[in-house]
Image (cartoon, rainbow, N blue to C red; front, side, top):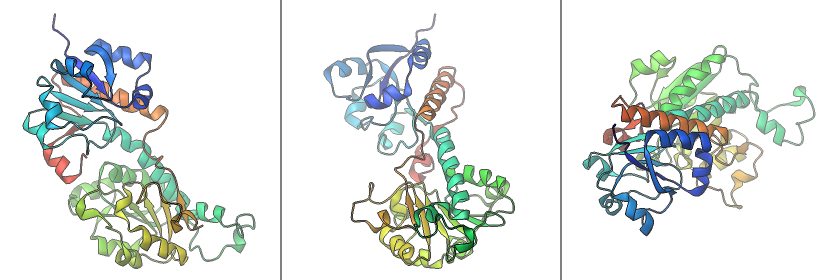
Length: 339
């Protein structure tokens, strides 16, 4: 009988309780050998260090400590890290690939609710719903009194997607539910044929910006993408356009966006901000032209169980030497594609 590999769950207590109900923990225990403790958020604790020498698989999520070279030294048998959430940036570094450790993430699964939130935001942006609701003068007056909000429509609109990432690609696909939508994509690394097959057209960012009614951001957080959308880019957007950010707050120059929204020219729906959370002094908190939500687009509640299911499925594939569906390679990590 084949011996089951030793595994350790590494994440915060809150994450562990969200990911693993009794049924999912039992399923995990059927595939691997779990020690005592089953779960930890401290890889430096003596009781955990005693286990690490035998651990072949780690299941990680939010609250997991960074896998530094020193911690990896304490786990010489480690062969796979299966991340039950999206980004592994901040968790792993180049050292894991040098050691031949395989990394997977549930980023594809986590992309589902983010893309759904984005579609809802785009639809609401078309009708300017959040901004009209926040305008005490107009919210209860009827549509005939509404001026200064542009075309209150979701028909034949143009949506710009910045970043043909997992989420960006899913948003392009979901936009097919809207009649007559033109979808443009800006991404220097995207394949024009893949973008076209998804139902969009690949263009340069400078050409995309003046044409869109809605700008939705899905680029990775890298040094070169900081303030990708700044004063110059925002000024290229048409009047009454809406900026949607469900990616990373640093992609947008918050001060420049606040100035454009305060003028009444642009609108914004932000699930991420820079900084996060916004300070009480930020004008983005007070503008009726801006809706801010507390980073809720990603997996929450029952959606977290879907991430766990994906990861346990991935574990089963790894044990059976089958291709992994969420593998993160050194190359994709460097580009931010699987980060």
